[in-house]
Structure formats: C-alpha cells, structure tokens
Image (cartoon, rainbow, N blue to C red; front, side, top):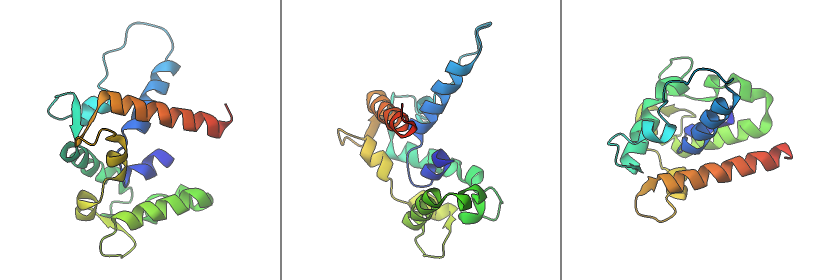
Length: 154
C-alpha cells in the first residue's frame, strides 16, 4: 500500500524494482520465464538508458487511472480505503495529496498530477544532471530495501 501512496508524488522506480525483484525471487524453479521489462525500462521511453524528468512525469501520469480506483476523475482518500485503518499511512497519503493539490480541494486531478513537483525524481538524480540512470536507480532501490529491512527488524 505504501508503494501506491508514494507514486502520487514521486518516482515509483525503487519500489517497483524492489517488488519485481521480490516476485522473481519467490518464483519456483521451472522452465525459463519470458524476459520481463524492468520498471526502469518501462519508464525509459526512448531506451537511452536513463529516465528524464519528462519520461518520469509521463509514466506517473499514465498511472492516474490505476490510482483513481473509484474512477471519479480525482485521486483522494476515497481511493485508498485501507489507509483509514493506519494513521501513519493516512498522514503520508494526506501529505502526498496536499503536495500535488494545486487548487487545495483535497484531491488531485489528472492535470494536477501532471504538473506536480517531482521530489523523489529530484532526490534520486544524485548527480543533478536531469536524468536518473540505472546506477542512480539501483542505489535508490538498495537504499529503499535497506530501510525496509531495518523497519522489519532484519
């Protein structure tokens, strides 16, 4: 659930890559699977080995319909009913919505999401060249995995 909430404001790449890695590790041995497109490759539209801010914004905007679970044309608390039982998740959700909610109506429209700031992209672009390359994405994923392991107590 937290991964979905983070998508509202930022690059889902580390969480998506982590989920994909976990899913691949959990697969039983058997015939070779078809090659899968990584989360990075799915966002890198022009296949130049790096994600531009424009590619990130386009990928984030393409997920709008997945986030708008009740299909009312906006992303708000109603799209995340499971967060109501988790105060920390609810606070994060509210913060993510507020950061993208330009007209302050408590929800995020498709247009607001397309124009929202990109704090996670900016954070992961560690060399500040306007792109997130695979090394930066891998470092962010490793950091997210380490944080998750610490949180689990492992």
